[in-house]
Length: 203
Image (tube, rainbow, N blue to C red; front, side, top):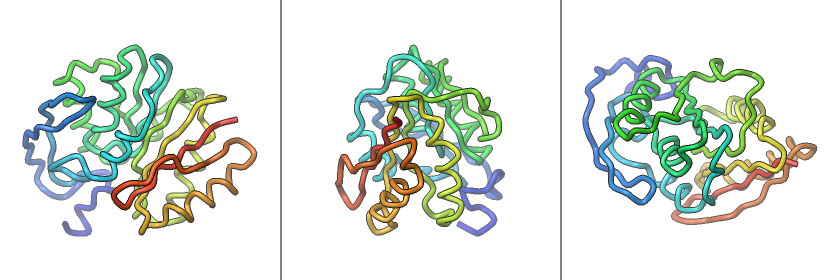
């Protein structure tokens, strides 16, 4: 993938060639649309699989957040598990957001709202946050991203983040503990296949 087609960009340069993939979400096999220029376009990536197998059931109601949604495996899993909740699928990649909207329609998930970060109203707080965060954007951008969204957890709510051990999961856990000490606690709740799942619990 060229630098101009990186999945962190708003508008990938590659042709938007849609393809259908069968994946397992929420314990069921479903068909979804994917395309080049988004993260892990041909399957549910290993980190996301580890996350989805490690998190507790999401709240049945309230606002739920998938931060860095890609084509939507986490957001769709949240929506399927909690049809009474509103699921925010957030990404900077416009192609990814189009795919999430299409996949939500295909799966009958009318509770998914796929938007860019700035389109989430400032007064929305989250009953849960699940994320395979974009570690490769760099430490400064990643920290800014987490400082923007983790403090928006409702009191008592939890975020679950999956991070590869070799990409700094343990150092990120220490950073979150220090940076958010006044508003949240963080601990590791799972470790599998080279990934850690961190739980951030809002005070």
